[in-house]
Image (tube, rainbow, N blue to C red):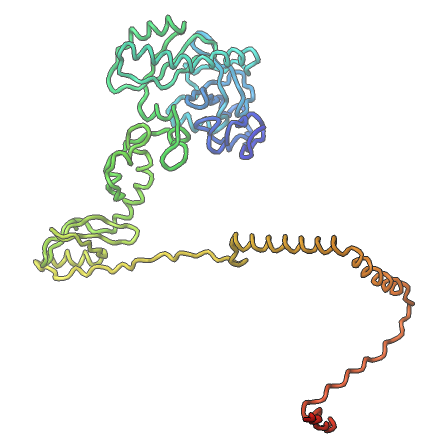
Length: 437
């Protein structure tokens, strides 16, 4: 099964190894958005196919001499060095012609190798068997290189599908004499050895990893053209020159420093030139930084510690006065109001409940249930007698006629007489008899 983001919905896409959008199953993955483009003239169609090897770490172009239709994700057998190799189709159609034009490769070149056939079960079995040797071969080759005290770092080993050739990718600062190393590798792995040196950025792309932004490295997912990155790009963006924060996993400056450089350069065109210092009556004001988001220029007086944010218009006015030989008395900085963030407190809509209150209510309910059980066990006969008249009263109520007579209106009870009337209506009582002596 394929992942949900795979457009074709076939197992040839990502093979459930990751998301096609992130390229987890195939590095440098490209979406062929012209794969279903109808072509009127079949002779003018591009007869070159892009093949990726080792999960996209290396790509090459092969001629489709058989004019067979290939889809993206098909495993094909191609010509190799004194044998054959197995790769995956990554791009077909007119997009391949655009890639050839970009990389200055002739579509009708004589040296271009050919596609032999679709890979059968035997080819895939030999391919998987030799690919399983790469991890052990990498550890063994590193041990041999360290034994010879060579200043190099082995990044990746790619063994051909038929097991006749092995390509060793390494990085090194200086030139390395690996004649003795090749002889030891050939005797150890029984392969035709090819040593290929790559840059440090290309080495990090082959290894892969997660950057400080939380995403996969750009060099291992989509970036192919590595341009030089200097510290001036960080200075234009007002970044602190900290080597540990500005360096990537390859040990060089991050490639993403060039992504927003053009935007910063366009914004800095509105700022005045030669405004590094301003002459004031209190001393010389030195420029610290430029804020392109608020269009402010921050200055500090020589020998002081207070920062003065000035607008671009105010800086131009001061420069004009300095050109006339006038020193300003006041810089007129902008007052920046500190915006305090409002902390939203939690509102309990249900009510203020605590565990102690819940425990008290549960104990009260338990005590009530115990008292009711005791009453039922002590006076079972009284409860039965009480229930009997209730049952008797319920029986005639069930056998009521369909038409019920209207009940007479209930007479309201007479109000009790007031206190004053009660005293008046009573007869006079005789005095109590006197006791005899």
